[in-house]
Length: 257
Image 1 (cartoon, rainbow, N blue to C red):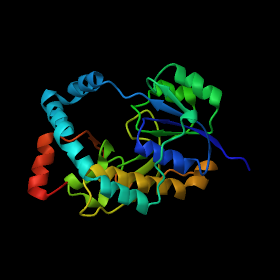
Image 2: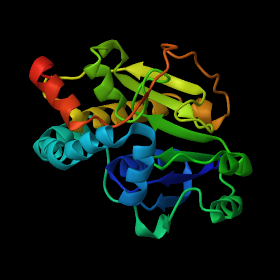
Image 3: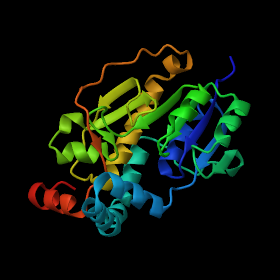
Image 4: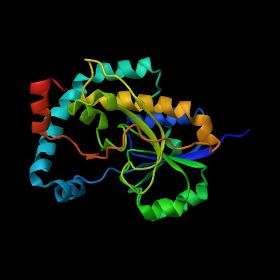
């Protein structure tokens, strides 16, 4: 039997490489469509509108002074996680990559119509518009590094630990709809963190778990036999990046890294 065909819609990065190499074992990958990063000016404008100047200023300080240090310090631990999980994160071949400015570009529908994928896998893009989703009419699947709907948005693992909610540190494999991490759940699972993990490694741990969930459910996905699962919790929250003072406060008082 010939493999089902897919495309990947994503941003450039290590988790996209990881996803590509996992999926190529099971699917014919027709194209990897890489979206340009959103301009910093646009990001700031949108965040200020949602969160206010004070919170956004705190997020900027965190991203400038804390996040880079954690990433640098965590390189050895990240390699350890990837090696333990036997993850291939080498670069995706350039020949299969196509770059676009936005996943919501009007030409994306035409591109996907021509490629005729059986499924679409999404990783790290901006929110896909309802119009695009309805126009494409192809099942779209995402690995979310958080337990939905309680930890929607970004850094679900960090916020679970921040809230002393370790039994909700995990990953959700789900279909994409027009909401933010609100699609039907294919599978969810909890994972433990070690004392060596921190903000920079949580998402890698969770994404590796997501790849395992994908592998576990691959036959059901391919044969369209997924029966959406009830969430592990019905609590519903949307999280954003931490601020400098949120991180420092929890680091000093609870040693949350």
